[in-house]
Image (cartoon, rainbow, N blue to C red):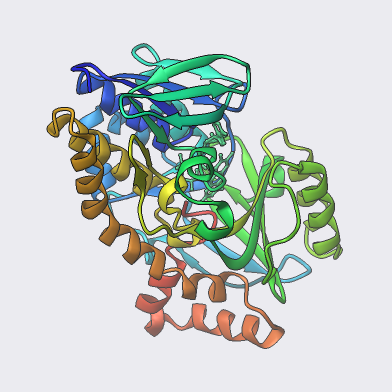
Length: 388
Ligand SMILES: Cc1cc2nc3c(=O)[nH]c(=O)nc-3n(C[C@H](O)[C@H](O)[C@H](O)COP(=O)(O)OP(=O)(O)OC[C@H]3O[C@@H](n4cnc5c(N)ncnc54)[C@H](O)[C@@H]3O)c2cc1C
């Protein structure tokens, strides 16, 4: 491999820009290709804690993250009339020093930190990858062709890089039995500093409104044991499904639903993990959700993306051209952390979207029992509003 290798990264959300930042800092020449025409806004609050905050500190972005941090103090469950039936302060499950930030703000800060040094190409996507002993030949949807020394997939749950080189989606994706959707809504639908949630059996809808932001997001989660025959990019079909699933006239649901569905940053996907026997093949490797998605129920998607990006770049820099060793070291360092996070998701769905009316009642009682706060703390660490 040349001393200053050309590296192509697919995907510019959290993992991609963080990886590009570190690769540039270590002397590589990264290019990022992102399918969307511009940086994608949207999403709810995502948590950064522990190692991911240390990495953010090394990147010099901690002051900006703190400045844009969300201010959510309360989780409130309401009934069909909008009356509080249960809830808890967020101090129950957050540690001092943790940062919660809107996913879109984090993506923007990471982009700003890398965009003057890294070549970003929006509105294009890898079409084919051909691995040769000395390089990877890449063709793009735009018709462009290029050669790179390495290709790194940071293109999320439905990663094209993974599908082309590592494993078909049917083998990699493990559905957790839920679907999730989100989109921006009018701030008046929320309460400043609160996440308000309304349950019906197997479903939860909510409004997330940070007191330090002038926007609010609506979000929805529902139980569906199968992976539906639904194109993950067909937003019309996704919105139609959401409307039939949440058709009750409860709480402010109709407004939340219609506004979130009309929002330009509408996002919908299955809640599914990516589990792979290996994260690389020859000159290609995966990072973030593309390689090891833990889901929003883990409370760690963004943190694992930052940690993976830093680890991968560090190993590539240390390996002095031996990318096979770098990929192996990256995977063996990160896999135990990812596995732990992937295992820790089960209780979150039971607490967030209880399957029956009696389960909702039990959940409400549990949240009231202050003696069970430590247990509640663990499972509530990963609400859609407080976790990525
Ligand atoms: C718009 C949006 C909203 C989200 N909202 C939430 C939320 O509310 N809560 C939550 O917990 N998590 C949310 N997520 C997921 C969360 O960002 C990730 O779980 C986590 O931060 C890890 O990030 P990632 O960069 O690995 O993957 P992602 O954040 O999924 O980013 C993948 C990126 O790759 C791009 N991409 C996909 N396919 C291609 C392709 N073929 N070529 C080029 N680029 C491609 C995508 O457009 C995207 O920008 C959201 C993601 C997106 C994109």
